[in-house]
Length: 148
Image (cartoon, rainbow, N blue to C red; front, side, top):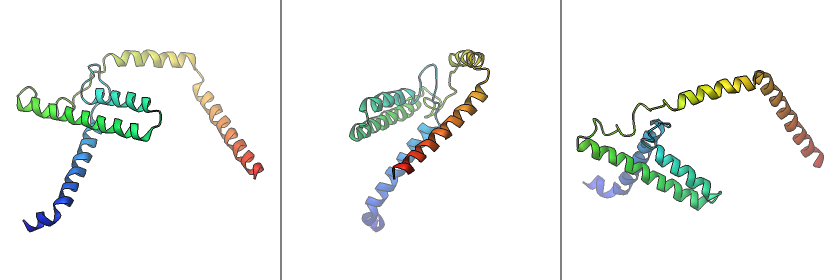
């Protein structure tokens, strides 16, 4: 008891850090695309919109990240609630699932085929682009040295 009395703040901080890290890992390893928009996907989409609207404001971006964390917490809590009610098999079933990518795959294949048809020499074009980029960087470095 004496240990807790003297170290309660440290224990609280350790608990908060572990909860934050755990939540970050849950979000990081959950599916990122799904036709049904399940799991953390809606929260991430809202975060992207909020951060884009912030236009570089640090305070606005921080608030957007905090709101996103709260949204993610609600998703996790909802999973536990549904599991306790017997509506899903595990607490993580609402955010760890096999994603439904049926609507994405045909579009991807069509776009891939279209890309190869429009760019038959894309490897050569990419090499040329890399060479032009190197020349541009060299000219910038050269201009900087001449200014000094």
